[in-house]
Amino acid sequence: MSTAPQLIFIKLLLITVLGLRNTRTNDGRFSCEEEDEQLKNMLKRLNTIVEYAKEKDVRVMVDAEQTYFQPAISRIVIEMMRKFNKEKAIVFNTYQTYLKVLLYVPTIKILAIGNTMSIKFIDQFKSRFRFIKERKFQFGAKLVRGAYMEQERERAASVGYEDPINADYHATTDMYHACLEEVFYQIKQRPLGQIAVMVASHNEDTVRFAVEGMDRHDIKKSDRLICFGQLLGMCDQISFPLGQAGYSVYKYVPYGPVEEVLPYLSRRAMENKGILKKVQKEKSLLWKELKRRVKAGQLRYNPLENSTVG
Image (tube, rainbow, N blue to C red; front, side, top):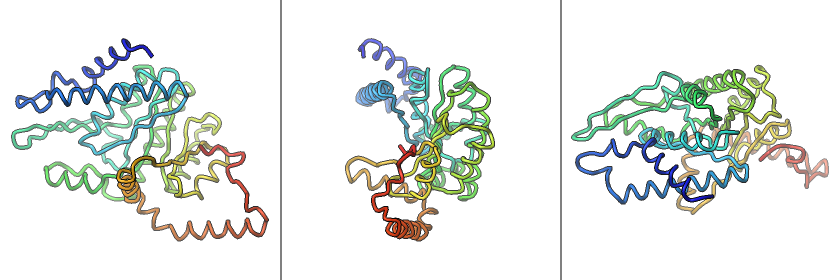
């Protein structure tokens, strides 16, 4: 990896992604040299990670955060897609389906807060397809429900803007399924391989909807355009049957310092609290499988054999 092209890319990214020279305030909040240096270092590290991932043919899925951080994250990820997703989807952006406006017309709201001004832009899932098609690179997306519901609602109430979160769990499920329908439609409108999507869900109905949608739209499992993901230790009754049926499935392993991983897992628990209510069902299924293996003499039985669980 040569240094010069990387530095040129970083400089272009600084200008095109965040428009630093155009967003600085009179009090210098955004002109801090230390913050600029931190941003440059972050972009260099991200560029190094994705270059290595591309070399090893590994996908990089960038998590979503709160709406007041997400515009900058999405803009950086899109630029990474522009650079690295020319032949196939290496970089994936994450889309949170608990957002009300995910499938509608992009909006920009400028909020006056005291003596400061905040620009609120909700990244639109549907508009990304058109944007990327026009620029001729491959689109990678991970669909999730979302993990910051309480924080989003508290901030909306305290600052004074509309709550960005869907009214209830069912509305979020409807949004998730609507996004999947858009994925199915877009896949059939384009040459094979231009779109890749991770269905990151522990919800049986959503996984079933995705599988049935693939059948309905004749999207083949072997094409690996749509894959599924669940946390390691959660919903194996979903992961293993999918893998054994030939679908591409990943088990997600949180890794890092305990003080950082535990809050992450706590957010996943909040995000999937509907699934946690079904723990008794999962325990029953595990007990049933254990008894089956004992009776069949298959204590060393490996459900991953001949499957595509990643």
